[in-house]
Amino acid sequence: MASVLVLGMGNVLKGDDGLGVHALRRLAGEGLKGADMLELGTSLADCFSLLEGYDVIVALDAVMA
Image (cartoon, rainbow, N blue to C red):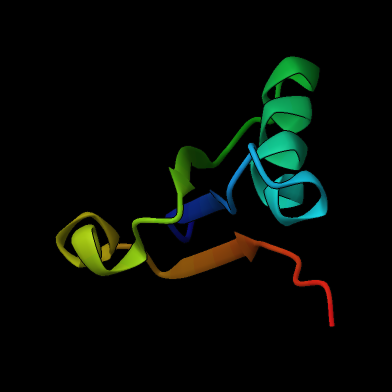
């Protein structure tokens, strides 16, 4: 089975921009099985080493454009 990481991205203090984090929290509350979850916020550049070793990475994010 592939190792899966789900990332919740965004700034929860800036309204819609925090959608990824809120979606991840909702998935965690529903008991998502078979995947690791990481609430990343806005620090993607600081965590590349945490992403190594996963076969699949799902990033939950939104941008107001």
